[in-house]
Image 1: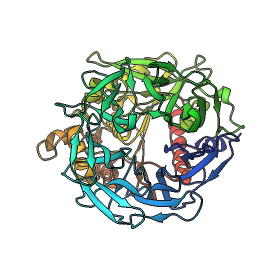
Image 2: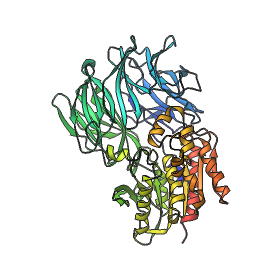
Image 3: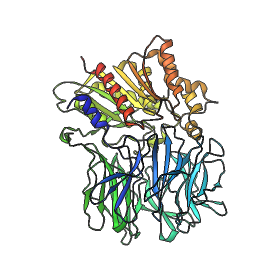
Image 4: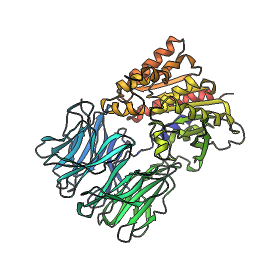
Length: 602
């Protein structure tokens, strides 16, 4: 296979984008996928594996979908060209064109548990009242009348309804590490706080059980890692169910009989699925699935559990487990037959030590035959920063590895998955604490016996793009080149211009522009642009509302002012990340050419 064809084949492998759910009869599993060239809703026959599209959007992208309780309609959250101005659409599940329930391009509409038990009402959050606040709304899908249910200047996101259809369970999002669970009475519009607390505590609701009296949740209250608990919807009191030494992820599902609960542990990045028999109180691991990452799971009829799973040598696929028999089978297989799975590389966990003694976990991918000579290496920094690099299928990593290029993917302080304290260390410290961790990783690579210290590159998108620019401007001696995508360059202007509903979170994470102008500038790559030595490829989406295009343009102008050049590419029909596969392929062809030009030489 030609190398350019190999890249195209790897990058065009279907990706699953959540929204995993079953048809009422248990025949089909629905999921969002980009295999049509756009993110659309698909379904797969759970027995035969035959797939078919459910929606056929070309310009719009489906971001979320859910089936009504009576099985008659599908609810879709859709945006255009990555603009994140999500609108809600309704489509008959038996076929027929979708219809827009909302049509306000200036408003974001978000929902995670929309349908009322009677299938007549949908709940969503929207910033229609004020641009910086997400309020709770309910729409009657028969009359199309929308009603503002609750607003108090905070951000709320509906997660589901109580079985009687009277109340909505929702999350109040204060920050990624500080949330509340609330109940809102739709008729009286009164809010009941279920999780009062002081300081920063994370709470996230799971399934409602026992006739609406109780619900499962995950929280880190009093601990460094999130644990599984069950709480009362009447009093708010909760008690632990499982308290492991790693995070219990907010990936929970209860079977139709409510006998079984499926839940997931993030063990250093690897997913461990457990099934709790609620009648006996016994939890047992789900055996027989590859070691990787479970992104979502959902029970269907007859105690069948569907999972979306990815691992280093296997792309996003759907598996089904019968929890009563333990039988597990793979339903989809998106890996092309032409890809030699044996040639794919699984990473190993390594650790770099920062100057202050902190241990920085990372995943190291070494190409086959790495002991024969020193390989070039790309350090890839994930976005967030409150996110986690995990051992899932990474097609671009595998493409680099097939060309003899190693990859280091670190989880610097601020990453999730290593405890609440580790995650919160980044607050107010971007461009300061992370600099120590990035330098620790650079030193680790420079000293590694199988890696070439003269051929090191750094790459990342979103926060990872910021980290890339930080490396090139403040640690310039290490890098042969860098690639930054959708990258904040000026922390002051970034906080001021990011999408309105994010600004309160960005001020907490990064700093207050009004009170900390000089400090934010000092921590920004743009203030150190004169130090750039290595070639830079900068990629941006025109419609990016998270990191506006002005951030990239500022950095391009700053480099020009210092007599330095940059390869700058803007995609007019993309936002924050790639929605269109053709743009993703074009971008990664550019990136691979750029990296190989500067790394595949002595």
